[in-house]
Length: 308
Image (tube, rainbow, N blue to C red; front, top):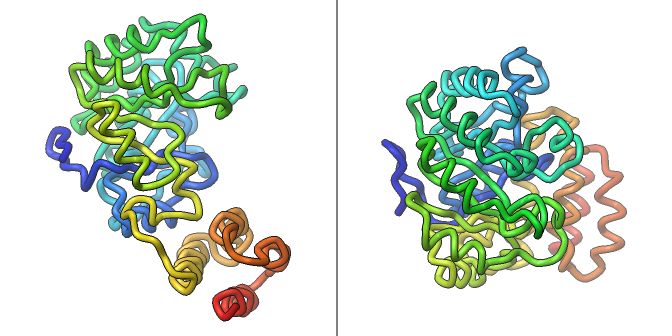
């Protein structure tokens, strides 16, 4: 079990932050299925400091999600520290620094994975946050900008020197985006040298694979992203019956409506696709689900799926 400051994580399999997916309803579901830690979507430090309404909405959470980390991104040490202080006032358990997002708009501003090009800046940003807040600070990185600049070891050293409590390593470079394969040999080498707990991330598609990756790498824990979408059972290792999947979809839909009103039905469509992909006739059912506009219609479609 991992203890960071006064926070004890609930298990070694964690939910990775994914923009557009790891909102409060999905984080609650992941925790119910055994995720040891859940993390918000990446949130702009500039937006937090400016009290931007849409940005602040991303910080909403439910007590059921604990332990919860809020992930922030930015490239200015003072702004990041100020944002972290504001976030701390909202009561999460951890603050996570995004230093791995490969999105062009994020990197173009010098944030996300662009920080991997400057370990000195990594240190200044992390240190400014650690000094400003009392709760543990973690960071999520990639192995480097590209294969010609694998700065992960310098980045990890900078983060350790700055006082972070845990480091999550996605085993890809920024240039790889989400293609190719995650390099678990590099993750293993980092875990062997690090002075703080290291969490491995990348290409985990099953509960068994999560445990295998953790054992191979020597990581204290692993973080699961895309493998958890439509499959929160990945955290517990159980295999759901079709009726259980349908019931889970209904529950997820109710949480989305509770959080977003009728708009929750539209926001749920990307989850429908992932939940039902293994069902017979999924392609035809998907067409019906993604145009359904009310809860009763969705339930009718799902009930026919369970019956079939």
